[in-house]
Length: 411
Image (cartoon, rainbow, N blue to C red; front, side, top):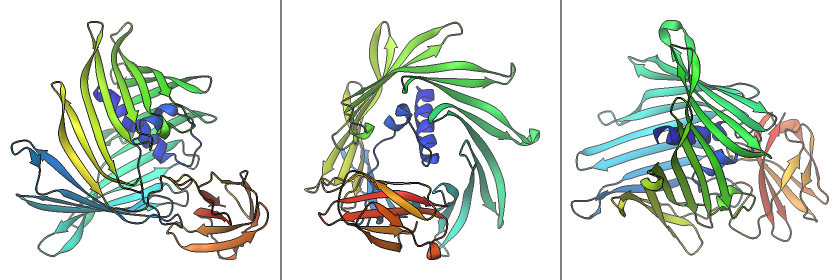
């Protein structure tokens, strides 16, 4: 079970880290819980605040004090700052994390600060530097902590990805070993496909004595119901897993995830295969409240305990107009639009079926309008005199009110 959760998290991180690379790994996308960020009408993310409480069993109610998180984003949906404040009867704790990205929109640096109550200032505590290869087939993360005004390296790990065209074939994890002054294998996950659909994901650990990877767990029978082109609108997903007993694979677990029509996870069930029957080992339900504009304003996590679901965690979200992504909104006025070529150099062409004149707006990664044009056809000539190479987000707005968003990489 632990390896399953680690595998799912790892694959989701893989998808996020390689967001600019075309992906067809359904397994990876399905296990990432739907994330709802808040955008302005221009497509620029606005700050988001949410407060969380734990369930206090002795008094049968939510805790009086809760944790609050405040996030800011750039125009591409990347988090820029994250401030966390924890309040309890025993005192409070604050931390802040700042993120930096390259012109591909990939994270390069995160610095965590701790709040000094005595001086009322933020003080650097730790940082992680991330290096993504030019073709995005490897990602290296190096961690440091602050000591006596110096950054001390505390560890590093490397993830190596192997692709066949658009399909992820394997991801290998390596840890830095100081006395060897080199990276050493830890684990890897191998993927197989059938008709462009993920068939199996096999988790293997590294045997340092034999210097080989050995089987641990295998996941298969990935089933998606009510497929609608986007797994965030699938209502149910399912997978099964087997453990390696040294000679063969033995069926051991099953995971079933259910979603509402907005793509939010509402139930996650992990079952163990015992005595030819499935037995719930771990499960959670998420009770989500939306306002009149279909914006999520609260969710309650309930954890399965001895046959019943019990309150565990509640989060209340700030109330902004909801847009699920830069290209898809909760309004029927949104259209799915893309540009070609991407990356682009001097001109682009729209690829969608809508006909008519439109306004094209280009925003920097910080959400600043840097270029605007009106066109009667589907072609846009870019004025590069004030545009540097890097990642941008664009908005298409037609006279009939239809709007589309997307990302554009300028060479």
